[in-house]
Amino acid sequence: MKLGRWIGLLVLLVALYLVWRIRQVLLLIFTAMILTIPLNRLVKRWQQLGMRRGIANLLAFLTLLTFLLLFGGLIVPPLVEQGQRLIQLVGLALERLLVWLLQLQSQLPEVWRPVSANSWTQQAQLLLGWIVDHFFALFSDLLTLLLHGLLVLVLTVMLLANPAAYRRGAIRLVPAFYRERVDTVLAECERKLAIWMQITLWEMLAVGLATAVVLGLLRVPLVLTNAAIAGFLEIIPHLGVFLSLIPPVAAAWLSSPEKAIAVVVLYLVIQIGKYQLLHPFLHRQVLSNNVISRSGHRSFPPVPLTAPLTATRAATQEDSLRQKTIDQTAQPPGALLPALLLLAQLSLAFFCGLTGLLLAVPLVIVAQVWVRAVLTDHSKGRQMDRDLAARECTTNGDEFNSLAGSKSKQI
Picture (cartoon, rainbow, N blue to C red):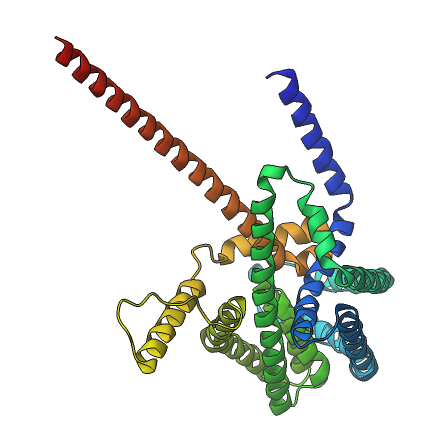
């Protein structure tokens, strides 16, 4: 390679190393950007009603602050109290599980026993000791998470004050010939993230309420905490379901194994109902509202008419066009594949910890939009090169034919 390419490769490696070193800070900035999207849309809606930008920003910030204060004052204290009891119940359930395994092992023939009873006891003591030793580390992580949340809140307020300036600054970092394309890609990322946030919030609310009803009917203790955990972990597809199962199953196991099995079955029923009924409905409704809101006051561009139509026929044609656009948007060609999403979750959890696991879905959405844009531009560039080559061949052929014709006339 030439010297310029070696220098470019070295700069790329240094940039990747810097990104790796500040990955936690970048994830916090990305979280603030995600939270800014719905608040900025709310501010724009108030601006359309005649409100000034500064007043709309202040009102949005007060709305967010009021929600956080109500959540912290009404929801957090009972969650903390029930969370302490839940930790105790999980410990008791673990001890009972070990006792049940020891009893089961004692009933097996000697040749079928994998390990002795003393080995089970020693492993249980080691596990309980590990939990006690890492309790304070977990508490420290929670404090760090709270500090990160405060930093994200401050960054969100700063971004909300003037998001257009930050967006223009980010666009100016790329070459001038590609800035318009980057602006389009950023708009598409914002639209996709807004759709994901709306669908996820409704699913969190629905799963939390359904879990509270199910656990209340089964008389499982600590209904509020288990329902809050189940609703919150909906932000983590696939893995969140299994993580949310641990506390209620442990609490139900203390009453009877049959109740624990019933909890597992009903949790699976809730998830099946979410994926088969709720998710398609929400996906369709949110996309429908998004398509209508993107076009302003008119739902769609005016339809070209070859002959005068009545108002009924015009409305029918507009509705069919709207339905066709919604159907095309509701089934994107690059939907998130479950295996790819699970691999991204595990990788981000390993390299970036809890924050990476929580942000796995939006990060995959943004990466998908950028990769699709790059591949589209590459394919368009190759198509333009082929068209240009074909046009040059046609031009050369016409020139050759005209030259041959002129020579034949001279002869």
